[in-house]
Length: 74
Image (cartoon, rainbow, N blue to C red; front, side):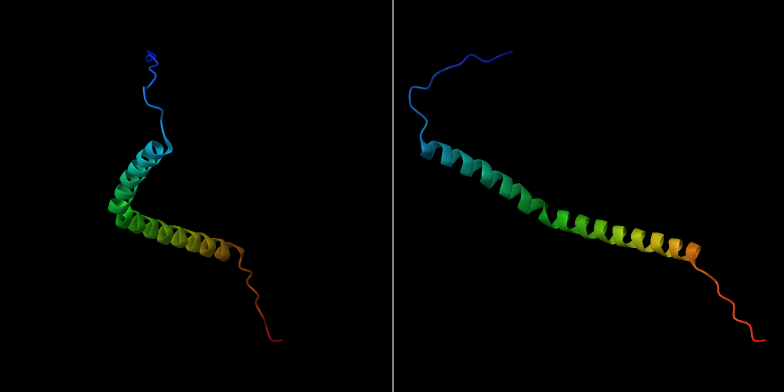
């Protein structure tokens, strides 16, 4: 359902816009600061898991492709 368009009696000024944008930005910054330590912990754990998986896959691949060379004395 569409809202009816109303025209404000006062024009919207640059100060009105800046005040509103600043209020929105402050709200977002506050939420991010609250979650920052949690996000850093999750990112560090994810990075560690990724490095471990890449290491294990590389190790497995290396074992498959290893050539065994036998040297005998005659």
